[in-house]
Length: 270
Image 1 (spheres, rainbow, N blue to C red):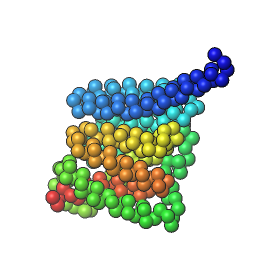
Image 2: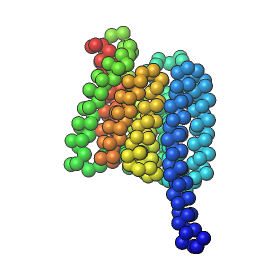
Image 3: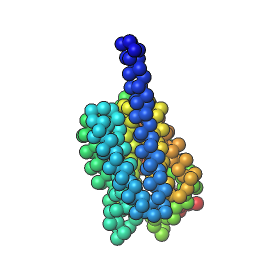
Image 4: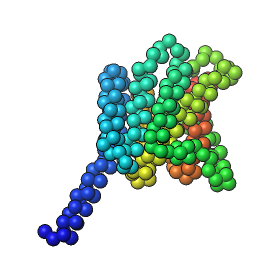
């Protein structure tokens, strides 16, 4: 075999290996979905699988250290970490609304650590407004879209009211919790850190669908296939907005408004 043929063969082998490596993030995402299905049947089985996924992601990140996929594996650890924290923290004595806050603060700490490990600036995680002239209208329309999104998800899930009566003043603390602890925290994780890591390693299209799949998989515990599909569509929509603006500002508020209206407003009117 001459030198050119050997180089061509080595190039093909390297290309094949690279294609295989790009499959692994999707396999981890599928495993998270399986773990979520287990949570709906036997929560502790789900925790065990999520823990194994977390460990494997950390090992994969260490093995690939210095390469773009290492950062993606590190960012993906936030997926299983969400469920591990939500099921293992001693929250039974707290009102359910405060569970979101109890889980979000350690998650934000973990997200900060991962951003530092990946050498991400605040702007890399979407923590910027971007071009004022170009993005203002997009952000306004995006945050307003949280209203119809909340209505749509309400008719899918039909959650029970959190309080017995409609009291706007009493809704202020829960509203802030939904805005900060679900809207901000989840957007920093999924459309900020995870999306950045996926976009740097995978194609732009694949990064949108991968992060959307992980986000939707973590809603399997609602036991509604329609809701999982709906959440995936919303995740893709949010990712496209972030890709266009480079900012999570609009989607963060839209996410918060969606959850506020879903749990604090529409149950009292429908």
